[in-house]
Structures are given as C-alpha cells and as structure tokens.
Image 1 (spheres, rainbow, N blue to C red):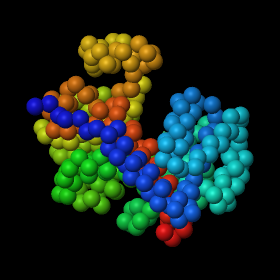
Image 2: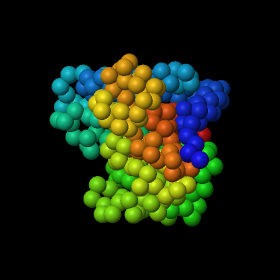
Image 3: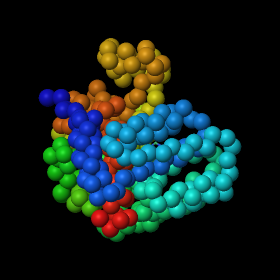
Amino acid sequence: MPATFINGAGIAGDIKKEVASEVAGLKQKGVQPGLTVILVGDDAASSAYVNMKARTCEQLGIRSRKIVIPGPVTTAELLARIRSVNEDDSVDGILIQLPLPKQIDKHAVLESVLPSKDVDGFHSSNLGSLLLGHESLVACTPAGVMELLKRSGVQTEGANAVVLGRSDDVGKPQAVLLMHANATVTICHSKTRHLADITRQADILVAAIGRTAMITANHVKPGAVVIDVGTNQVSDRAEIERLFGKDSVRWKDFEKRGYIWVGDVHEREVREVASMMTPVPGGVGPMTIAVLMRNTIKAARMRRGL
Ligand code: GUN
C-alpha cells in the first residue's frame, strides 16, 4: 500500500487556530504580541516569504512590522538597526530573514538578536538551552517536524531516527529534538559513507540536505516515516518528467511559474516503500510559519513571565 501523506497544511492550520485563541487570551490581559521581520537586500523569494509571514501575523491578531533594508548595507549598520529593535519594548519577536547578502557577517548578526526575542531560535544561547533540554525558543522548521510527528501519531520513543543534513538551522536542532524525544539518532551528511545502508535503518528519516530527490526507494526501510524538509526549485522539463512523469498537478504548476518545488525525497519511488511521508509542497513548509507564530507568543509570554 502506498504511503499516506502527512497533511502539513492541515496541521499548520490547527496550530494557527490555537495561536489565534492564545492571542485573544493575551489581548484580554492587555498584551498584544508583535513580530518584527528584517529583510536585507532585494531577493524576490525572501520578500515573498516575509510578506507571507506578515499576512499570517495579521490573520492571527499578531502585530507585525517589516523592516526592509534594500541597498548595500554594512554589518555595523545592520547591527545598529537590530539594537534599536531589541530595545523596542513593543516587539516580542525578531526574525532576520535568511539568506543575508554576502558582505554581511551572518554569525555576528544572528548573535546580536536578543535571545528572548529570537523567535528563529538561531542564537547560540537558545541553541545551548535546547541542547541542555531547558525551555527555550526552538528553530521553527525542526520544531515543526516534531509537531508533525506528534500529531500524526508517530512513536519516537526507541525509534531509530536518521537526520540527513547537519545545518545549524535544521539538521543540528532536529537531531537534538529527536534525541530528547527518546529516539536513537544518527546524523548523516554529504561526506557520509554507505549512506543508504544507514538511512535504511531509520524508522524515521528526516531529509534536510538540499539535494533534489536524492532519497530514493533504495534509501528507505519498508514502513518508515519519511519527512522531507527539502525545497529545491526545478525548472528542467526532462527532470520533472523523470521525477513525476505525467503528473498533471506538477505540470500545471510548472506552466504557471516556470519551475516547481521538489523536496530531497524522490516522492514517486519512496511512496511505494514508506508508511507515511510529507509532500513537497504542503508538508513541512506550512509548519515553519505556524511554529514561528507560536514562538512569537511564547516569546511574548516568557518576556512577561506569563
Ligand atoms: N529563510 C528561509 N527560511 C527561513 C527561516 O526559517 N528563518 C529565517 N530567518 N530565514 C529563512
């Protein structure tokens, strides 16, 4: 039987409803949570993401502010802007949209965000708290993956979990979260030898390596749960044909945009082996924004001791 798709959009919708009702409760206490998103440069995709975040804030009753710094900017100038947002008491959450332009010192920028307002969970203080198992703001995508697993009834305790990818924003926090959920965790990456031998041990496989459709049926244990964090743009007709055949939804998407989103998992192949899997799009992606909203109200509460 082919794998069932985990409905990320539906689960994200449930979380957003929960957030909206929490926001209403906070407003009754005189608290209006606020998120500020800082966009540096003029990347069209980043701009679209930021607008989507602002729209979601509005839907849920969270105040949102967008700071766009379009021109060439130095790290020092950006740090000064962040300092003023850190000091603004009406702001609960700060998100620096990534990627940053090349001239900017990303590490210095992410470390300059006040940890109590760091709704991305990228500050070393929040990552350290996560590692130690203390309450903290946790990176949205890996936290979203945990929520998908929990709300889909996937047992993590005692499970073999393999995380493919070791990025600071997904792979590393993902592995820690799975470990805290009592899974036995293995981290694989681009230099891992005999990758398929390792991924085939996974009851839960999280692919976050940024390589289009690299996880094939051969990498997956029958009955495994496969979570696809990848978002790769594919605009080559032959590749779309190879991956999706005549799938009319994909081709309609392609005709509309000139490209389609493809995950790190070869969906057509893996669907025949896995028990559950996330689609791309509509799986992990919507969860990232929902958890960002949840982190914003968490930051609002934590800052006020509520
Ligand atoms: N760019 C793409 N995804 C993200 C994210 O989750 N957080 C930030 N800050 N930038 C991103």
